[in-house]
Length: 143
Image 1 (cartoon, rainbow, N blue to C red):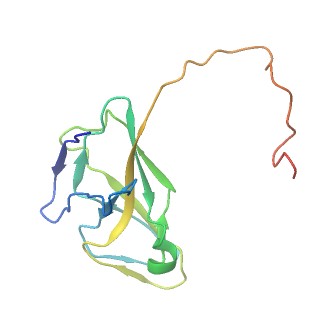
Image 2: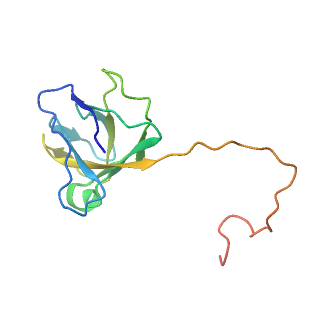
């Protein structure tokens, strides 16, 4: 799959897969960031990524972030739709300091990872009753 990508900032690093079996590619910071304890900051990646039709680009925090860097993505995951690919549709990240200490991040740090997943839009059909048996309430089964 070939993906069009545009740098909107000279420090933007093009994503790449780091191993042959990697499912996701890394997203890097383009600026130094200081995060106060328990704070959230939005930062740009300096990238516009053209997600293909019938796909979504899902961005998630790197699994090592909380323990190694003291951060996570504030919105857990980011969904980048296939129609968010205009010339100025930069991808932003919301980073959250999950510690009680100041966190310093540097230009070039890998803080997120992305993967393209196929999407099929659903057609919703309203019904009077569902056909399946009830499984219980919140927290079931076996709760």
